[in-house]
Length: 342
Image (cartoon, rainbow, N blue to C red; front, side, top):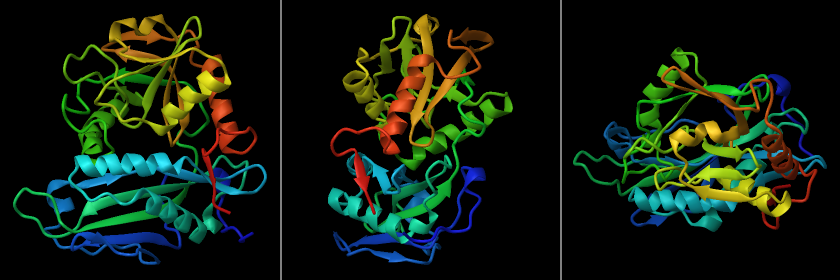
């Protein structure tokens, strides 16, 4: 076992820390090169690089962590590979082959194993695979040279102080366009949300609830996570829409709910005017797994969930404990979900 870096694991924030190696592969003349691990964390490109002019960039997020029995693992990297491929197609970028994506993840984690936080600290090694157009482009068109890269950085829990229920607001801004790029993980979707999240934070809210961009009557997502609701008779409901990102955590939670915990699950359109009927609400994503929501502010009108502002609701908690138990090796996960690195 590699000796760990001398880091205060218990007190890590969700911030970037440079690690030893990152993976880089370049696409040129119609093909990807072999790729390599490198030490240099700086990227040199033309001032006219497509990514700088026209935001041609996509990314993924996943984590490596130490399980109860001391193994280093990642969770469902095949789904990240598939989602990046879907993002590539929508953004007119070459697909980085899915088996190479998984191999690059493995190489990056192995090369930075000293930065994978020990079991029980609550910290993880966050992996950021991303791809961008790097050659100069001045007319509006896709690049023809690209870089695919993965860096790793150890992070603490996304929400400090544990899973205290959040207060969020209904945003007046749209995160995506009706036939836009909301369903892929493109940098431009996040650029759309920056002003909205700063506004929400300035008003004292943790997050935004974005509504569907066409009618503004249906719940979509927060910009960084998908919603999950629990009805008063313990059915688990998630919003269905073609402009939200298909969260890997949310899909995994729905499988766990149905196949392992025996809950009834439903993916359907969720209307703003039915929010008051739910017993629990959570935000699901890689960073926090599930963050409970205690109340939603709709232009001054408060929608309070019966689960309250003190702790996660009972169903959300059971989902959270089961999925994190699988990730940490305490519970058996479905076949193929846990990729052991070493």
